[in-house]
Length: 336
Ligand code: FE
Image (tube, rainbow, N blue to C red):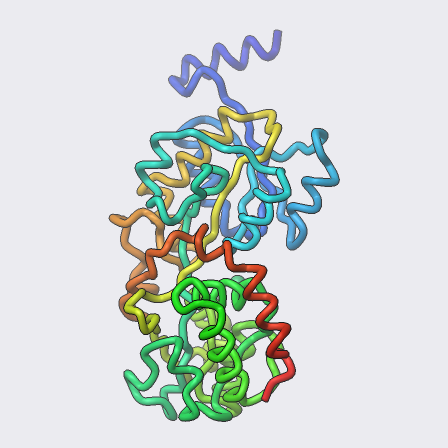
């Protein structure tokens, strides 16, 4: 009875006749997602329930199996999206809207995952000790000119694996091994800490350049202590020597295999690919919208122009295992 009454009221209010729910497992903090949940509710009448999970979404879905309440996963990095697909916890989604809004190289060839925002893996360079244009390619980082001047996080981290996989895609395994050895020889210290810790090291004078994701500039600027680190550096957008643009990775979404709220889940995915949501999402996370016609925020645009490598991310992700093997072979994390 109650349900009928609510539906009648809803219809009167000219909202969609059926207001459903979608359950999301997310690596992203709920505060970041909230404006999108609000926008989705306004546009469709559906509610999105987001559970924040800081690691192991795939393992959790495998463990929960059919009992899982999750309809969608929000995660970052192509490695994790590819991993979820390989573990069989996602399902393909056919949608003209998604295919129109999201460039082909930013989604899975079998439609299991879709990129929503991109982040560049770039160089943070000391404003004091590195001249503009001194580092223009990733290959440059292996040049002896940088001996003792580079800081980076672990070679086994997914962000590093993504970059090394891209290097393999462009230059092959052998050249990438040489490159990795060259970069290792140039390290100021053994890889340790996250992307921001490397920028702190530049600020502290321990190294002159580091490798990091673009959005950390935004994150550091918001933090009173870290803003000082951020202000000690500028972003350089390296390309590959073969002319390919800056290595980018994605945050993305995938529908869970066996999702109980498929229609609402699809509606949320489509909403997230809309120009309105793209702009909101990219702005709150300081990333780039995947939709080519949606501009980044003024803050992000102010860091300089990015020309992204347009190699399909699936091709890059296919080298993950080779990349990890190289990191182990050259013992990258031992430092120079
Ligand atoms: Fe990150």
